[in-house]
Length: 444
Image 1 (spheres, helix red, strand yellow):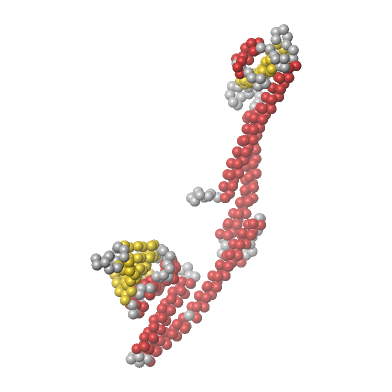
Image 2 (cartoon, rainbow, N blue to C red):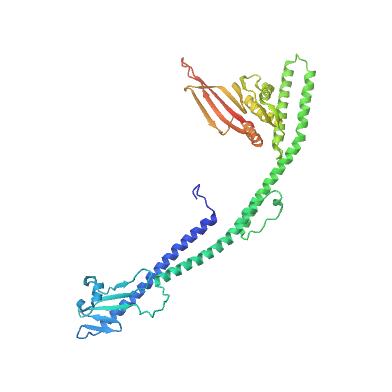
């Protein structure tokens, strides 16, 4: 069906078959009525032709067989026949008829029939027959003409077909509706119950496919839950050992050992990143429907602290950080907020090698934009933005993780790929292009 014009399968089949049945019944009713009258006309015409060929006329050029009248000339015809049929309307062996009916639904009051029959000796005969309605006895009688009778039979056939079709549709649609309700009610508890019977083997096969697919999904979810439960203990322990060992080495290694201190700093930073990411994944993987506890959070202070803590990611890079933060205090789940905002800032720092990172906080909206400089262009100033584009670089998996976190927190979230080119220089030098991503968080 056309999009926006969707109807149920049951109604579609029902109305299609009813329309088809109506057309077929009407056509057959018309054909039946026409065949009936054509047959009656053919019988009458053949009888009149035989009467014309087998009858001898009297001296008045007239003969009568039952209620058939045979004449030698048109002028000999009765006046009422002449009024019904002109001389030019007569053609050999063609039945002419004039039926007098007050209206379409009434029985005829009178009927005139006439045929011109050429004889073998070159003469011709006019055969006529006149019918009149029988005299009334004063009583009311229900009389139905053939046309109305055919219409009544057609309507009765259509009603019978409709009733049979409704029973058929009900016998088919009820199992389908049962399958729909069963599939909609499936959960972890219902999956352990046997599959009900849906009368038709095709529906039973479909139910088995649905049941098997959901069982596979449940198995995968259980496996992920088990991994999260085990990871909550197995991952935290080695990370804690690494961080404590790094803190101990800070005290042991001589401050003059530059290479050792640099290597230790990298280990410490990597372990901190691993700890934050592990906490993020574990929190995201918990199947908890209860809302997280909220408290007053100074977003400006939180963003400044997170930005400062993650500055080690910009070590050795030519990156400028610009903070435009306004005072903002909101009721938020503090730990979850730190996880989301920290991931956004971390991604911006990690994926910027040379350029600018701009962090803006206005009211309850946080915008983080990283721009990577260094691509040469020869075109004029322009800005190209692709909303929610496929990420084949830039933030990568980080944005997908942030997307899930914001969905769980019910925060507004959007990201965009940005390409900005500088203004051309007057000396003809090549322009530089800045590429990056912008993330907008609507905290609530």
